[in-house]
Amino acid sequence: MAIERIYYREHNFVLTLIYGKLSNAELAEHVIKMHQENEKESALTELADCRYLTDVSELNVNGIVLSASMEKDHPRTFNGLGAIVVAHDADHIYGLARAYAAIASQARIDSHVYRSLDEAIDWLAVNHLKDEIVHACERVA
Image (cartoon, rainbow, N blue to C red; front, side, top):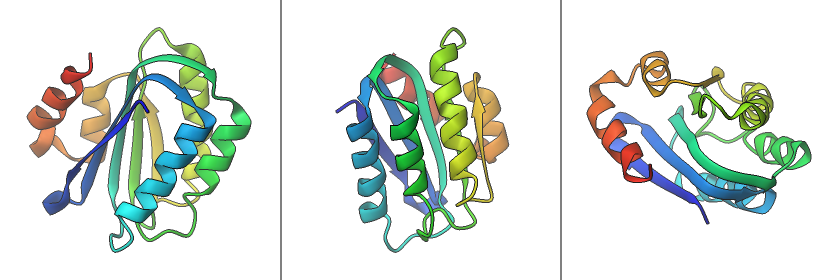
């Protein structure tokens, strides 16, 4: 699976690195694991870095809708924020991410898609973690 989750528990924040190939099944499994790993958390701030996704041939709108819909009614998303960052040249992935964010916004305060990691960090107000976030993201570049 091409998904890693890095928790900053003391900041109620999780960075998810999604790279390589991603399928509908892997995305759904990620959401299920997020629920399990955060069953006692609420209002979690989440950032998904998808800039290094290289293959979404097994990911489609139906899978996106299903996975994003599973976000609803879970304490971790209630009153939380979510941001997804995609590569500048990945229009197809950008479209899939926007569909996910639109549905996930029903479970959170808000969810946005960015092409800039800096903009996502600013919007999520996790600037105090910026160096750690950038370092973790660069590991998979």
